[in-house]
Image 1: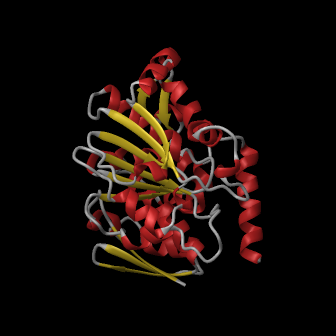
Image 2: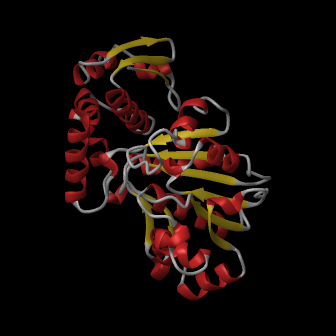
Image 3: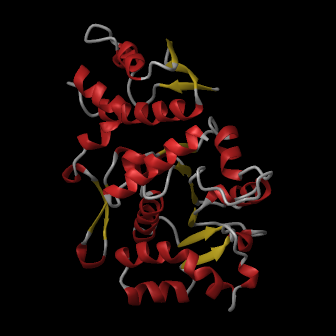
Length: 316
């Protein structure tokens, strides 16, 4: 069982709970009948099964996001958002352009929660993006980092991840650390190549303006004037996550991505991401953004795969 205290932000609580139009809590309860939901002042208190509580939190985020820019929201729209269709209300035309990449390609945040990642960095120095594969966490984060570099808000980008993979140890792979890590970093390279011309990207990497390195290489460093992205954060231990988070220096932005459903650590080791998600919830300057299968922008089959595994895992 999980308890959630969801504080109404970005819009006034009076506007959110205004019963002259409709009873928003009643609508939410109708869509989540298995959860105990009450309103209290500027917050909604939720108790119930972990997965349903997280799902409701994501949909409340979407609801607030749409309400703050739309005065004429109606009961039908709220029901649509609560049933998981919030992102369909934001077409690709209304996606948020982050920057223009190679060939003047528009690099966009397409979904409500991807846009929340972008906006989170406008008022926070550290952002956690938590959700399943294919939801655009890393791609969106890299786009925000590249924009910050191009706008001279930071002097370098650092991309890192723990060197942990299911059933495979980097120590037994041939080559130096870069050679060993490159295959696991390929999604990061692919994203960068869409946003920075290959020649310039190579130059940036040769000069250390863009650095891709294993998490262990962060130890002992103070990362000033940098946009730092930790990918696959679910595979960090307590000590690794604490070490990484405390590397933050002056004028730095930190992003931590991860999927709690894909932990490759030994069974008895607690994921540093899961722990951080619990203890850093209300720390000033840190924002948690949660994504779900509604944010998947890969092939439609990927959404069905995620749903199928989710159903199986819940029954086991």
